[in-house]
Image (cartoon, rainbow, N blue to C red):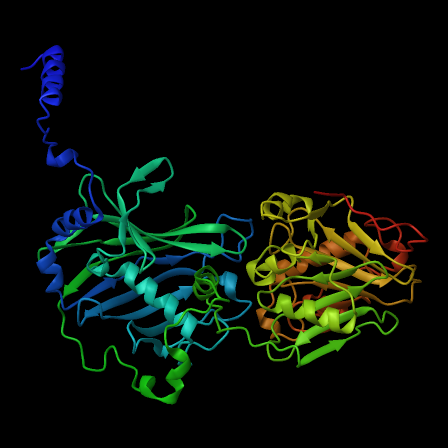
Amino acid sequence: MLSRLSEQVLLMSLISLSIPVITPVSSRPLSSASLIDQSLSALGGESSLRALGGVTYHTTNLYRTWSLMENYGFKTPDIVIATTGTQNVSFQFTSNTSLRQRIDRAWTVSDDFFWADAHILPRDYSLVVRNGQDGYASFMNGNNIVSEAPNITKGLADGPLAEYLVQEMLKMSPALLLQFSPNSSTISPMTIGDMTLPAVFDSALNIAVAFNASSSLPYVVRTLESHALFGNSTKDLYLLDYAPENNIMFPRKFMTVYNGATIEEYDVASIDVNPTFDNGFFVDATANSSAAVDAAPVANANYSHAEIGSYFANMMWGGPYAGKLSNVTAVNPIESLPNFWYIMFNDAPTYRQVVLAFEDAVIVSDAPPHQSQLIADWVQQNIGRPITHIWPSHHHHDHTYGIQDFISVGTPLIVPEISEGFWSSLPGAKVISYTEDEPYIHSDSSMQVRFIWHPDAPHAEDWGYAIITGACPSNNDPIAVLQADVWNPGFDISTTDPAFNRAWLNSLVEDGLDPRALVTAAHGGIAPLQDLIDYMGYPYPNRTHEDWKVGGPLCINGRKSRSHYMI
């Protein structure tokens, strides 16, 4: 054995003699092709994977998903979507690049979703996804919209959803590495927490694969997403618990992790390799009809994978937004307050917004995606001034995913102090915060609004409500309450959440609200608060405007608008 000094002398001699030093293969820098080759060998060999005609993964017990967009807290998923389920996921490989997938899934929705399905009916669908020039996605049976009856078959998916589903199909495909091209693949080490893994990125697919450093098996399949609220985000599919089947290694557990948080988990109880599929198993007969024109899997620049994916996972993706500025219903809920508007875009009536046109400000509630630009246009056309403030009723993404439309032009956000960190983390965001003891109040000579928040709020940690009334109302003057999601007037009453309703009524009693108040809701419409009181059988005391407590007496009497502070 050479001593350390002898090694140094020999190395110097080799350098001085210009004799090339041969680097051992194991220590050479790996190329993307060599990393892929190593992984293909670990999986069972490239020839075995190219000979693969099809695969079916069977999940029998473990299928669970969590929400990204409707949690009580701000970032950690704490609301379950699917509590349990079974599925068969089948792949058919007709060429090196042509791929077909069919998902036959049955699952149970958590009771957090009875706002859309009061009976929490069992759900199931059969979804076919195909890539290529003749690609599409189609529900052969059922649908994935929680507010629709489970037995309605949705048929062809819209193009943006189909394009998203094609990428999700590729990520799960056992033959994914065969799709990586030497012309578009590069070494791109992947960092997960404090660990850096060898990885390859394919720019044509926009997919990266990290490998287990010891086994060379694919470990994490990553796509990057641009999220309007979370910023640049990682969506990782973990491939776990490999076991051989027909001399090929397959994962027996899959887990989807978004920015470090688990949002999906399912196991694989058994695998069929090269099963025989019926001729129509991966085919929607309507795919060649005129209906398929808008179903081609083509990306839409206005809809990111982050938006499509979170809505689809939350069983709320119904296609691209359909609202039009030319078809708007705008009403004044209180006749004596002509600058208080309740707005509904009739082609997309799910989300209603309030516009408050003060002498020195225009305040708008919520920022639903894609509708936010329309509301700005409506305000400009009908009020002649820009929006000066946005009040997000709470942080849920269906109410706020369009917030960047306002942040980008410098519009301040009015939010509870508890959510200040969440909102101020968005680049360029200006935040006006308020607390339980100091609500945000804005007023002019004829109208006022007060934004109110309490700890342990129903529905979301930062959920709040607003009251709208005259600058100095008498006991007989009308007052309106603005809120989202806790009560949706006009919806089937069986979908209301009595726990949320009672918690809110308890707060209203403590705050001193007159029970004659008119509720203007983000969903459903306008209705007297008394309707909710009657439904709940709630012992609501006889309150008048003189009993109001939050922010002091309702009569402003020349007092200026006030906020907690702005950052």
